[in-house]
Image (cartoon, rainbow, N blue to C red; front, side, top):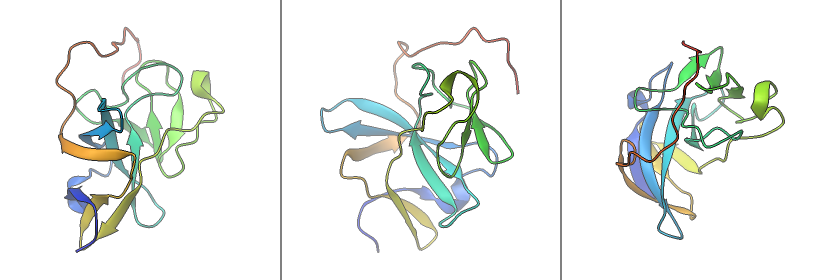
Length: 138
């Protein structure tokens, strides 16, 4: 069995959408993170659950919006490559989502990032997160 905390089975990561989980950073701050599918090995990537343009959650609890291998910000529509995290359009153009190091083994995804500790599946239990008044829908 690989080192690191098990996050989820690879099969639990939807092809279009995300698997939301919560981690804790070195300063004991809880952070939301997402697993998304990717066409490049190992087939899954992990990102912090925030748009780089502003503190906007990409997955608000019902999975990220995805199209053609890109994660779509629900507020302004910036699109991030699911494999590289890079954005080349919209308000977040020229930025890259902060990644979380993972490994895939035995059909499961494991947290391997020394900067984070896995806490639980699902998002943070707070009501203070950013909100959107966007007209966009997917």
